[in-house]
View 1 (cartoon, rainbow over the protein chains, first blue to last red):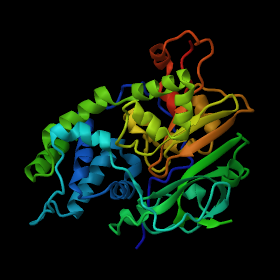
View 2: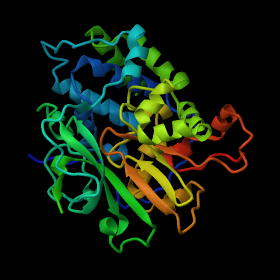
View 3: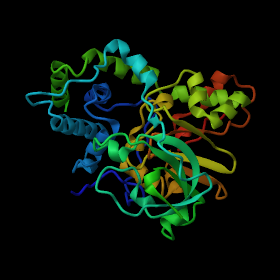
Amino acid sequence: MSYHSNADLGGQDVRDPIVMEPEGELFHAPWEPRVMALVVAMGPTGLSNIDMNRAARETLPNYRDLSYYEIWLAALEKLLLQKGVLGNSPPPPKQVLRAGLVAAAISKGSAFSRTPTGPARYAPGQRVRTIAVQPAHHTRLPAYARGKVGIVERVHGAHVFPDTNARGLGETPQWLYTVAFDEKELWGGQIPQQRSTISVDAFEPYLEPA
Amino acid sequence: MELRVRALEALLTEKGYIDPAALDVLIDAYQTKIGPRNGARVVARAWCDAEFRRWLLADATAAIASLGYTGRQGEHMVAVENTPQVHNLVVCTLCSCYPWAVLGLPPTWYKSAPYRARAVKDPRGVLKEFGVELPESTQIRIWDSTAEVRYLVLPQRPAGSEDLSEQQLANLVTRDSMIGTGLPGSA
């Protein structure tokens, strides 16, 4: 089964100008904040998780034509239908976010760190190569950083692994690393030298020793 | 869109998934309570207090939490400092990951294709679009937020700001300076 993300934009040839926006200008239509709030409020129900949400958004065929909150709305609708909300036995919510509990829920958030099941494979300063194969499911290694050699900068502990969490296969926590790449490694001679280093946060299964 | 959203809200309420009053509280929280002024206070504190600055750079989640900013999309914070030699730039090429707890909701440009595509490949070009020109000798560190770690840029303290209060300093800290696409205001 194939999987195509329309959201893996790093390094792509997008020529439209960046449109500035002042601080405080959050929404551009009255329905936008309602969509934001609907998505956040659906979190505690347990019908989907953040990784499933991202997978639903990035696989929208018209992702590139939609505005940000249009993406959120379309993905939410897609997920709700998939989960059977309109069917004869809609799944019961794990929890409903009541108005009085919103502030506490925001402040608490939901940490993604978990107890690791083994020692970290890599250490800061170690050279690693990212895997080259593009998986046929949601993943968080951008295409521009595939099959590249970088240096581990930080070890973050074990975190919920998006690749499995997005498919309902469980959290299967993996060690998470910040890996730094020299611009020449990523772009070769494509761009004039900018003295830049690009770091991504990569899960252990995305890496091999180099 | 308005009708579609209202219909969905009514459906989810009817089916018992959401409390519509919670939506109003959420919207109010992000419109009035959680925004870049939170991050500005963190930066101003770091500028004034060397011990806090050390803490922020060593354990940003804890340091930021001590000022009361915690939770959603800020559970795993890392602060990266700008110096005369290094300028930091934060992006989420894959979607729009952003440190909500200290900066609130991200600006449209941060979530859009041009920034997400170009920030990792042409950072100087992107910075120029924002009116920021760095010396050629400055190193640029780009942080692509591909997991749940969220980045806060600690800008350099403006020259001549020694006599300013912490609140006055916070007023100089712009949202863009904490993403890396801007510099703080002048003292």
